Image (tube, rainbow, N blue to C red; front, side, top):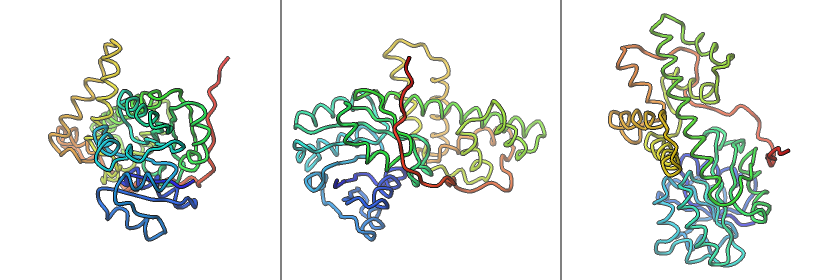
Length: 318
């Protein structure tokens, strides 16, 4: 299967790298052509437009920073929809709005092509190794066609149901990760203020009922001081905003979610929209005058698990 990949940013570039590393015929495109250079050097092809890319491949993957960006690539001049024909597949791997995903999927399906949403979860370090988790929303036939690709891009693949289901579940997981991040920040600052050693604090959380994926990964780059997570505050606000929108539409009176949004809006105002999400701990460092760093922690997250073949996660039912 010939694959086209549009969007070679922090996540997209790593996902596209997995395809190239595993021998797929790959065509790439990004608004910043320099991001494509490492792929072209390893044998990938370049497309001058989204339509040109779509004509050349069987599967078009988009991984873009916002629903608006995806709409522009799909519907704009020389966009994907201009070249969509029966037999082709469009796969959206961004974290996006479920309603917008459903709207674009209908436009693809009207062309006789197939659509699938397959957002990823697990961090850029796992996207780089093909060990990330993938949610897939689509009909079962399209899922079966995509499974060899999805199990190359990720280790655990969950078929979530129809179009829209994967996007909805993905913003939920990002909401939970954000809540984890902020509570971990508060916990570490409070322990530092109470005179506890931060390396010991890290281990106490890690081996306890208070641990989480966010703690075991992001706390390390927080304590290093780099705060390099390859995920920025504007993207956090997009994702938790989408979760809040779902709750409001369904009449769920959330209490924690609006506070998370308020905290990250303040962080963005202080440090910039493109500040690393883990820089949010600086709000508490500045308020207390404490330095939340410790020696011996890595500057970047690295997936130390070997790349393994992916598989479908089967939902247990009675």
